[in-house]
Length: 110
Image 1 (cartoon, helix red, strand yellow):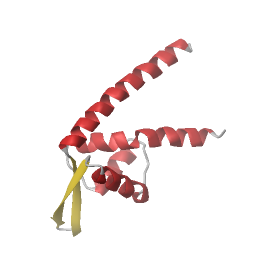
Image 2 (cartoon, rainbow, N blue to C red):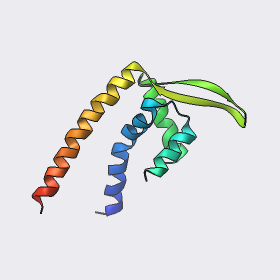
Image 3 (cartoon, one colour):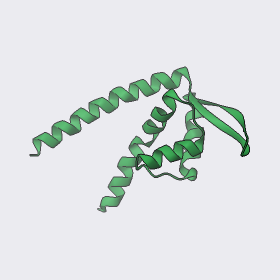
């Protein structure tokens, strides 16, 4: 088994949650989301992000609005819907439980 495959699967597992956290308090357009993901070391390309945003929009978790840009074409800004806020809050609870489980496992391995 290759370690890189496992690392990639771990990153994919938290990607959606991180995107929702970025958007939670501030609406963002895709380039901003990609920049935030790169800052957090979750490298992602547009070909990965756009299908995920579309899936979240179709599920009623995200919505978007168009805004004219002074430096190019109009931008699509994404934000959470009320359903998306509830969904993100539930994921936060799950993340906390996972974090506690991993911390426990790490302590047991010492």
